[in-house]
Image (cartoon, rainbow, N blue to C red; front, side, top):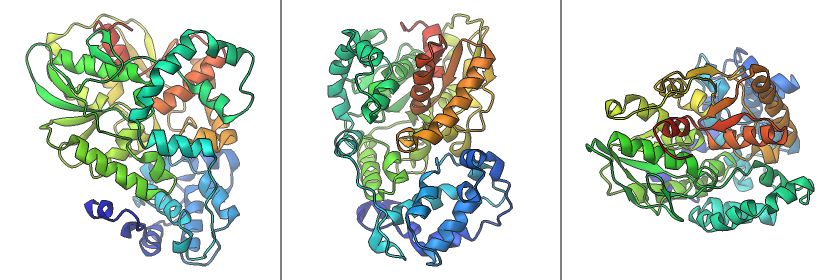
Length: 437
């Protein structure tokens, strides 16, 4: 993987048509993946199933069918949830196949059929991806303006009178949670992240915190909670200011060059720090980082996974929380990291708390990075299934370990006037440990 980054302009060797064809040929078309695929469940079309897409990819890269708009339709409908990969008896690397195919589609000169499937991005989307997602420290500059937008009541007026219409701006505004500030020390907020947060009490280790891109703006509460809990357990938390986006959004859209460049920037950002682990609070970022060059030494670990085995619990007090807590399993945690059980164990540390799996946890919620923007109809259908399950449960608290899922679910619940509280499991834990919410 290190070799890929030194020459990011070329399609990586493992994404070549020959390598993808070899991987696709490992699929025996057994069909065990079909009931686990969200899009197949909705359309009942073989072309929208994992084995159907693999057959399409195999035929396209071998030149037997064209990479045309119809081909693109079925590839674009894939959420990259990788539920099929988790259930596959032959361990076909479907995530590798779909990312590789999209990389080929994004480079028509490398396409065996010569068709140009690149879609012209809107100027707004290009601005967000190139100037904010790929340069996430710029999100910090938006924080005071968004807080003013929310606290002044302007956002409420915009939503009440639908001033943004049915534009992408309206969809993004609907997803926007209450913007919080980074913490300076346990319960003091500031405008930017400190590079080091020292432990309280006995020192037990050195941890790096990965901020991500959107999460550093929209999920500062979870990042603050992670720092709070780690510090109280005795861990020093390092937040390198030069870290950047994980690169998942770029990779899944076929932009391997940018994804690899971001990976290299993150490697450099965390170099020189003697860390026991690098913690990710967003399972989507964590799953991508686990498969990136950054995951060498120290290892990338989801916050719930790390905290389950962390030391220092005997030195902290956790207030009781006598409630059932619905637990939503993000696809990235369930199907890629294969660590969906850890949030349940973490919540069980709270006296009286009873974690309960959300019905339909084996199906995607439809957020899937920018999928809710790119495929709104399919995403809405998947979201409605989740909201129905939440409503029918009768519970008041829902936790999820991925910021995209959290924003997607909370937005819909908010529009319905629901009082269900959506938060990260580590945030609930931190509040019960004394962090001000």
